[in-house]
Image (cartoon, rainbow, N blue to C red; front, side, top):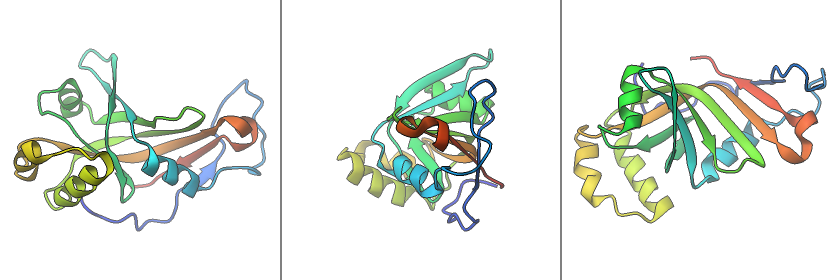
Length: 174
């Protein structure tokens, strides 16, 4: 399925403990973070880290601007950028918010966002970053330059102040 303006109509992902052998994580689910906690941090983050996979299998990490919309992380990049070339060959990636004290780590798959999503993306991106997208708008709307939508498979939430009791993993189904 291509990335569309599909709303996140599925139920909230189920929270569980991450598998962290040797950390002494509690076995109970008491203290797990609600999905709303991760969603809020993904929405409010200004900068995000994205890690893609190079053709030789090594990681490539870069900071990007983007938006958490309708259950996906959307960002634009040049079609010849390392990120875009990596995602063309391997859709798997990781996106993290900027605050390691309240970390949200999204493991997902990147798809090209459909044309119907792009006007809303441009409007909200302009508002969030106060960045003039006029020079790129035509190419983005004409699908000449990519806007990627990263759909989560697994998301981790790590709240430093309550790390042991709150470390949470959410699994998504497609």
